[in-house]
Length: 77
Length: 245
Image (cartoon, rainbow over all chains, first blue to last red; front, side, top):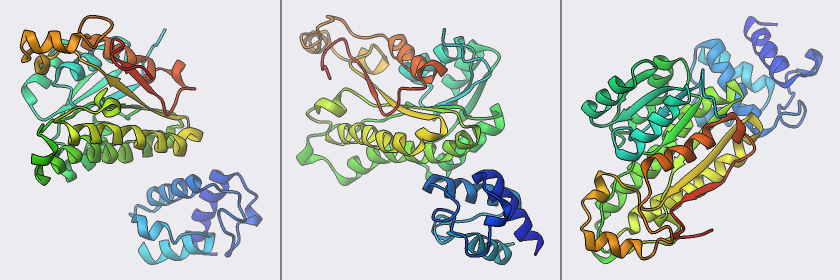
């Protein structure tokens, strides 16, 4: 697993309080990991800080799953 | 009661009568204050008067970029923004049928849109801290309407609807969003009224007098306090009884 994926997973596990093995490629933050809509906003904020990038609002809306996040950040970083 | 030690408050329109008094009240309760406004001189004078824990943060609220940058500037200067008081406001009074688009838009922009921008910028840190207080200064005319002030009344009523919606969204993060709606308060603005105008206004005020800026400051202090943590989406009407809700 890439370094980006590890760091994203750590943030998701800490923020949502889920088991690490639940955070798989297709895991949806809201449907599978129990996030509410505000959690997804906070996750994006945490990603921005961790990776020193800016995620615009329209892009943030497309980040729905763990895989989405890793893909977006890998491309943006 | 109401100890704000260790909290940092950003207050817009702090060069005005009500804003200045809000800043004094929060500062007296122990808060560090960020004084924002367009005119630097009165802000600096207030900061000098308050002494420690006071920062001057000039900002023109009709400049979108400057407004967006303000919460970050305030957090850099003070360490955080735990309390945001959106107090700045302008009037461009005119009869509705004569009101230009420019008069409408400038009032909506400064009073309502800048409030939205500042809330957006400040909430980030509040969400992380799991604590925040947003207090938007509305007006009695936002509820009652007032001839000649369709733009101003719309902006102040808009603040109430926005605050309630935002209050829903962020309540689970320990952030409250409330409004204070002042009635007729003694300030430089109301000093310009003639005695006849004043007595005309006061016939509609059961308390029989104008309010003092400190009485708005006290309402803001309550809403900013930890003790007010269960009050959100509310509007405190401080108007001597001229309109009761």
